[in-house]
Every structure is written in structure tokens, then in C-alpha cells.
Image (tube, rainbow, N blue to C red; front, side, top):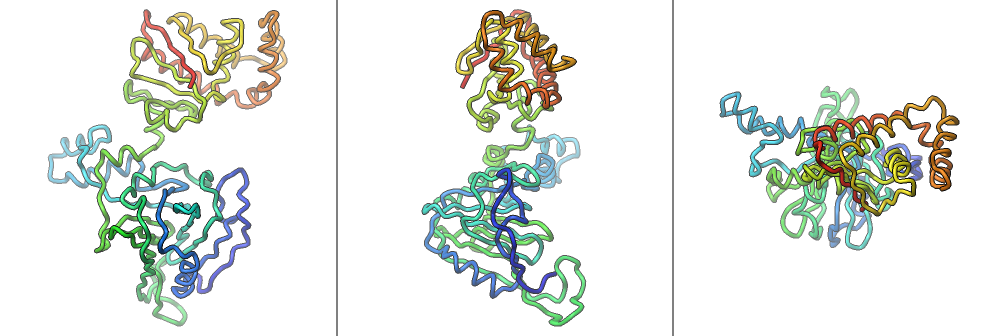
Length: 396
């Protein structure tokens, strides 16, 4: 355990727009006095919370964790029924969960005046805090985020901070190694949590937990406030929430394919939406930049430019021919041979020349990811597209 403040050499120069603890300029503090002074310097009282964000993963909100938490709540039931009621797809919408998250990258709070408060606890009892040092939409440096903080902590949104508590405890054991301190002082006062008390009586509590940070919405008694599963489910965007099709049960291996309403919300725009006329409730969304191979295949089929804002309708045979075309492009032995072939096939137009010059090099380097994408699209298509159905494609 560190005994003195460690001042960072970071300059908040986050390369690739990706968070790095080393580049963050916030000092690492353990002294209750210094933590108190630093948070007071941010003048948080009187500010209203506009929105919140968890940069990285919340370990309490993976699907496995959610199912395990549900399983514990129905321990009075027979085992078979207990397992069924804790399966993610059949959890009771009214089942209650706690409004808290376990993270290992900073928690961000933006206030109505535009300032952003950033806080993390690298390991117990350390705190790191700053304002306006981390860009709001910075990417996670470790694990991708999976929960919307604004929904998880919705009772705190729009609330004014009325006080800031720096709560401490006295201990004679190192909180990381659970052994007695081997040098004086043998009893130490450490910060157990920082709590932002809100006008509605609730609080946002930030606590170190071994080498994680826990953020919780608490009541006046410091008990965690509850959230129903129906509301929590809307907040979650784990891999399965975005890349699995609830209608067919198909789960993609490709990170470029998104399904359903939630998938559409997390697909970069503009994007293409694919759906079968026979099973229109199953919708696949692909960011236009990731639609490259199908863009090329469709362009060759229609003999013209692919319109990302247009709409297309292909029969079962036509669609499978397009997927075969995509696979032939991906199976090329060399880029030079592929280039010559596609230029020849464009005829008198110049659409393929432009496409190959602008994206050809990046395509050739990333063929494996496109192979996975086309394999997934074919498997999904087999589930939704009947012999007499049309594959409808719309640009958004």
C-alpha cells in the first residue's frame, strides 16, 4: 500500500482516443485529508448531474453475473425451476437488482454546466480524481463497456449535489493483502468511500474494492437502491444484447453485425438494415463502412454504384448469388489479380476503380474479418430467408 500521493506524469494525451491510466494526469491519493482537499477543489456542491458514463466493463453486468444474481434470489425453488427462472431470457421482469457497478476504468459524471468529473479507485484505498481531463466518448482501454450508466443510476440524473462525504475507517490491516501493517502507524485511517449526496436524499457512492472501483446509488441509510430487471435489461449492451438475434437465436462471431432494436441503437451511422420479407421481425444492421464486400458484390450485380441511402430487394437465389460473389472476392489469391478482374467486370463504368483505389488496400489486410462477417450473414440468412422470400436492404 502506498503511503504518499503519487503524482502522475500523464498529460491526458490518450492515443487512439483510448483510455490509458498511465496517460491520465490525476494523482493517486490515499490520505483522507488530501482526498478531501482535492474533491473540495472541484466545487461539486450545487451542480446538477446531466449524464454519467462507465468507460469500460461493469463486471456485475455480464450475462453470467445477472443470471447468477437471479439464481441466488430464487433459492427457495426446486432446482429445475430455479435454473429456468434465472435464465436470462426468462428472468421475471419485476425481479429486483441493485443499482451498482464494479469497474476498473474511470466513472464519468457530466454536469449541466458542461464540466466532467472523473473518478477511479485503482486499488484499495487509493483514489484518483480529476475534472475535464478525459474526453467523454473515450474508448475503453481494457474491456468494452456493457451498461448505460444513465439508466442504471437514473434516480441520480438531473439531481443537484448538496454535499460531498469522504467517509473513513480505522484499520490495522493492509486492505489489499489482509495482513497487519509492518511499519508504524500500525492503525491507519483510510477512505472507505466518497459519497455525493443529492437533493432527493439519494447518493452516488464511489468505493474501492480490492483492485476494482464500485459505484452505487444508495439511500439515506447507505443501502443500495433497487432496479427492476425490465429496466436493467434496457441498460445492458453485452455482446449477446447487440450481436445475437433474439428472434432466431443466432449469435454472430463478427463484431460488425448488430441485431434488433438495441443493435440498431449501437450501430454507427449511416448503416444498412437487412431483413427477410418472410421474417421481418429479425433485422440485421451493418455500419456502411463495414458493408464493403456486400457493397462491391451488389455493385457488380447491378452494374452501377451502390447507394448507401437506397433500398434493394433480392430473391432467395439472387441473395445467395451475392453471398457467393462475396466469398469469391474473399478467396482471391492475390490483390493484383482481383483488381484486374473487378476492373474488367465493371465494363464502361468506373465505380469499381474508385472503390478499389479507396478501400482495396484496407480490404486486403482485413480479409479475415470479412470472411467471418460473410460466413455469419450466410448462416443468419439460412434461418430467415425462405425459398419464396426477398432479402430487403435499406439504408439509414
